[in-house]
Length: 331
Image (cartoon, rainbow, N blue to C red; front, side, top):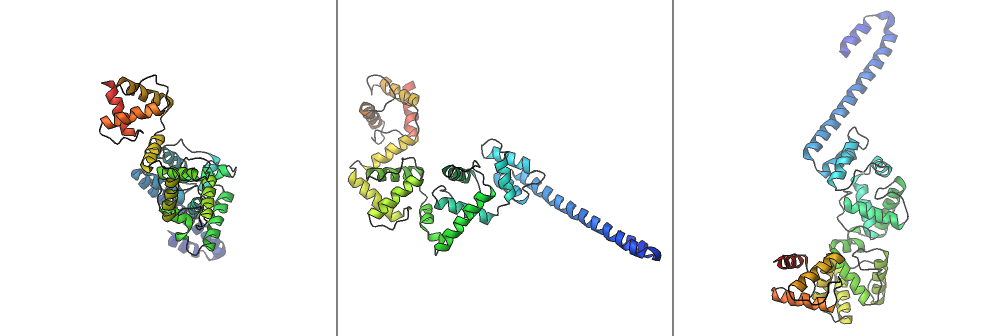
């Protein structure tokens, strides 16, 4: 078509200059149109593949490629449904999407959040629910807006912090924060570490499994007092030393402490505790009234019931034991 237009224009000598200018404009318009069509086709093809796949990773891939694309709003809604949270359509989410953060930038942000004690999962550049919670905790600690989503200044601050940390550390993979992260500590284990610190007189500001500024300072103080390298992050060897020191201060068997933590993590409400006591009463293990307080009498009753049912007599319940006790009480 372009060749025909060119031949026709050249066949009119008196209007060659005008024809050339018109032709250039027309060719430019056609080229832009073709480019836009090609880009639209690529976006449509990607979106169709993402919808067919239906995974959260696919929707995130689309949003990274087309943060303001035709289907961006639909992608965010579907992604929020897959994450089990309400549809996120707010200025903070859109502002972060418009930043166009690369995977490398996202990984740097996760590393910085991990180094600050807010993030305890994999460094993969995927801003899932764990990263969102870490960002929100970091924002709350600094009284910043965002509700788990970063603006340009916040993203820059975290990335610059990560770059500064990397520049002062010979090998970021062997840094104290990364070494602790590589231990893969469970929440139960983190709570036990905090309880060990408390037993030794170091206050982590609560035993909740979250290593915030209080826990980091308690670890640093313990490291300083014991001649360890002061980092605020624990190594495998330091964990063994901490556990040994705490066991020496507190003669209670570590197995019992672990059982107590496991029951605490069940998060039994007062009504559920009352129900447990009523079941123990109905089975003849407990006397008195059910008040929801697991005192010595209730602990002894739990221990006797465990012994009669062939499980370890720890006097603390597991989730499976609660279910077994409920079934027995109904008979």
